[in-house]
Each structure stands twice: as C-alpha cells, then as structure tokens.
Length: 343
Ligand code: SAH
Image 1: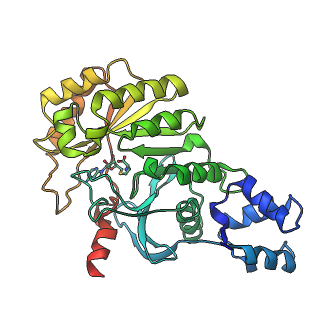
Image 2 (image 1 turned 90 degrees about the vertical axis):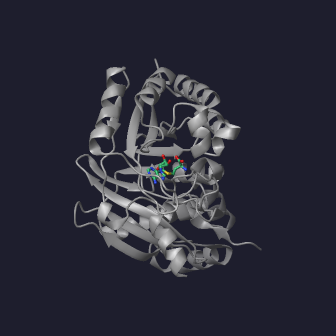
Image 3 (image 1 turned 180 degrees about the vertical axis):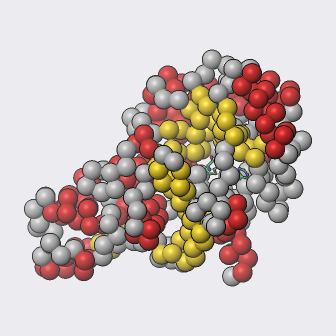
C-alpha cells in the first residue's frame, strides 16, 4: 500500500484518514495543527501512542531541511537552500518589510518555462513539489527564525500554475485556521501567463493577489523573452487578465523586468500604457538581475526611473521593486544553480 503524505492532504482528507484508522474526527484538528508546527509523530504528545502508531503505518510526514542559509548584512534578508527528502533542492527567501515579514517560496524543482532571463529554468523542470513540500518551506523557516511569517509570495523557483493541483491544495492548507492561518489577502502568486489556468484560478474563489509576468508590451519582444508567449500571446493573456479582474474584483499586479535596450524605450512605455489602459492593475518594475548565461543587463538608475515616470505620466500605477539581499544572491534560482554546478 502507498503511504499517504500527511502534509499534502487537505484538512477534509486528513479527517477522513483519521476516521479510517478508528480515531474520532476531532483528532484531525490536533494532527493538522502539529503537522504545521513541523512536528513528527513522536512530538504529537496529546495523541495516544497507539493512534500515532496506526497513523505512521499508513502515512509519512514530508519535510524540507535547511541545506544552506545566508543572511544579508545589508537588510537582514535570509536566503535558504532547502533540501527535499529525495535530495532535490529549492530556494526560499525571507524579507523584512515595514508591514511585516514576507517569504518567497518555490513551487517546482527547476522550471520548464524557459524564460530567457531567468536562472531557475536553466536545466529545465525536474519535478513538481508536493503541497506538503511547498508548505514545509514556510514551516521550516518559521521554526528556524522563531518568528511568524505574515505574507507569502509564490515567486521562487518554478511556475506555480504548471503545478496547479498541488498549489491549490497548498493555498487551502496554509490558510486553514488550525494550521498557519495566513489570510489569502496576504498571499501573492506569480505566473508567466498560463492562460487556461488563470481562468481556472478565477473560479477557485481564493482572494489572493495574482501577479503576471508580462515583461514586454508586444508579441515581438515577449516572444523573444518568453517561450510561453507562443502558446498564449499578449492579447490572449491580457484578455484573460481583464476577465480575471472582472470575475474576482481583485487587482492584478504585472511584473516587468526592465532589460537595458530590450524593453525599456520610450515607445515601450507608451505601448505598455496603452495595453493596460483602464485596467485595475499595478506594474511592478524589476531591474533585471544579471544572470551569467543570459547576456541581459539592467539599465542605470536614471533610465529605470525615467521608464517609471513615463508610465506614471501615462496614467499607469507603477513602482520600482526594492532590491533586497543583493549581497547574498537573493533572487531565486541563483543559489540552486550554483549548487548544481558543484555537484
Ligand atoms: N514562474 C513564475 C514565478 C517565478 S519568478 C513567473 O514567471 O511569474 C518571479 C518573477 O521574477 C517573475 O516575474 C520572473 O519573470 C522574474 N525574474 C526571473 N528572472 C529574473 C531576472 N534575472 N531578473 C529579474 N526578474 C526575473
């Protein structure tokens, strides 16, 4: 019989399993709560030994171990390299803001999307993370830091909507009152633009913030940067975004990595403003992080400010993302990549 991965079960599934082994349903609450505190079977002291024994015969508890940890001397950002039970590694980053502690987590080992500027996709997609492995990144970091994590961003390694079912399970679990109890409004999910899944997500009724990696105002540039644009071109993506906003009433956040000489001209700003006109949205400008293999560079601070000012003048709500942890390669994908090379 296949052992069930306890942390990947939704609460209702855990309850069913608890009843299957002959325990009353309320035990599920206790077990769920223990799991999200990072406990093993032996730690669950308010559950009888025989119940724990029965549980461990039909299930296992997955985890994420801290393989490496770096703390920024500049701003206290913490970067973790997490190792799954099978030895695969992903990255997570904890950032301190005035409004609380945010954590960026990964959804896959590697990524199959092939964006030309991104370190996470070099080497392709190895596998999906389970719902339990996704949430374990938060549980492990929380235990390590001894502090509550207030906000979650799914902007680490992987394309979350390419691991749809596990990510939805994770979202429901991380929000659950008996577990980490993080409100949906404190969670952002970033996608490169898997349009069919954006429509699916709109129907899940989860008031999270959707971020869409746009990075270009037209198909010519986006097609060169992001292979996903061949399947879901800009006009198809923007239509889905408009429908998502209509269905959910939630603002979308567009990410736009500014790459010098590629997507940062005056004309590009104008095109972008036109594309997003009348939309309930925000544009997050990210000065591109240089990744050795890509050949892309960021422009000067002055050029970056100029692009933002142009957008704002054209009526677009745009800001430049603060760069945190620049002394510890805090941008995702870089640490795992460096580590892969060493192996
Ligand atoms: N797969 C998801 C989430 C992962 S990356 C997505 O594509 O949205 C989070 C953000 O960082 C995305 O907007 C991604 O395009 C961007 N990004 C990746 N590499 C980058 C780099 N070298 N410089 C700046 N932004 C980058």
